[in-house]
Length: 279
Image (tube, rainbow, N blue to C red; front, side):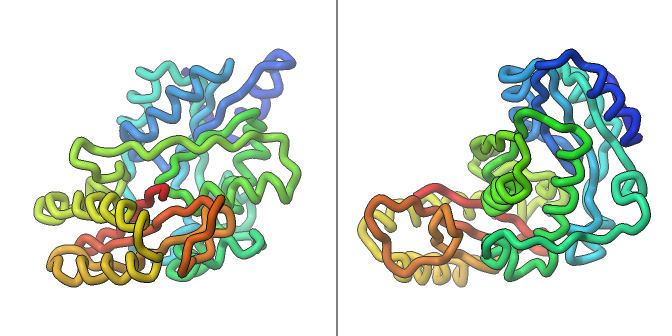
């Protein structure tokens, strides 16, 4: 397994590969868990070479304290990737990625960026767009793998590739869950014991909302979810929305031949957790 920290070094290695070598790319912010490793495993199955990046991107954090507190476990991450037979790991500094100034570009994603997470995290998707575009330019993958836990981000990255006409296939992978249903996240390690025990309630509610969506309209389901969280003293609901998968616009009533998904953000103490489920 090769580890590079400089743009020029990894580009030189990638340029040296035989023509036609397929590169599968898994961008991460480190603190790797089984969900990340499942992406690496799929990339290994579908590509000749797998590249994983580990970079905590400062421009996608709207709160400085979240950036400071984000778990950093680089040594453990590298051990896990080596066990997965990952080929190349890219671990740049912020200065290396951003060169002169650590600042986001401004993007338009046809309104996808204004929904849900965009309403609650100012500038977040400009930061995501900036770093993913830059990493794609450096790594030049054929395929890139992202988890569906961040489904809005996944759709935005698909839009990014479309708008900039990048020859990259974006592959969404199923949410990887703990045995009790909690969506795996690097943030889970920061939960207190009581909040960790309470957190599976989120997925339980999503599954029940999916059942209700079969017979009720979206507004009724949203109201039911909001009431359920009012009765839970350990979890604070930030939002629950039912949206069209393509536009990410919230809906009131469902229409035939449309794909819908329920999205949720919850505070478990100070830790913000997101999840979603296909309807």
